[in-house]
Image 1 (cartoon, rainbow, N blue to C red):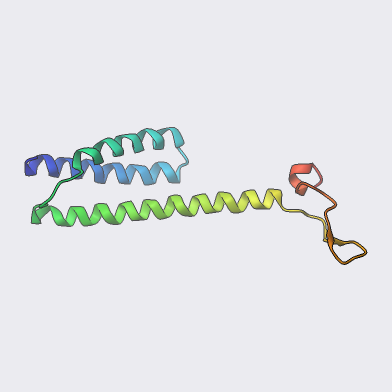
Image 2 (cartoon, rainbow, N blue to C red):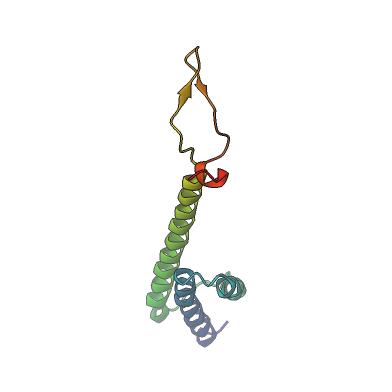
Length: 117
């Protein structure tokens, strides 16, 4: 692949990464999914490229930075959703112990899921 095609593909990938972050921040999931498909196709084109010209190394560094930034954003968002789901499933009643000192389960679901708020 000539340098011009590599440069064009790398610029497109950089633009996709910027859009990806914006869509993730705005929770535009349909657009994010479509964009990730475009990114996969572009990465297939770039896969196996060796000997990136020196003038493109800065762009490659920016792409690496933006990709890591997006990965962290998506990872943090996933953890946030997991934490929130834990809040909904958490038991709101205090622990109750039986006569042998073992905890007794009085309510199988969390307060918000059971309707007791």
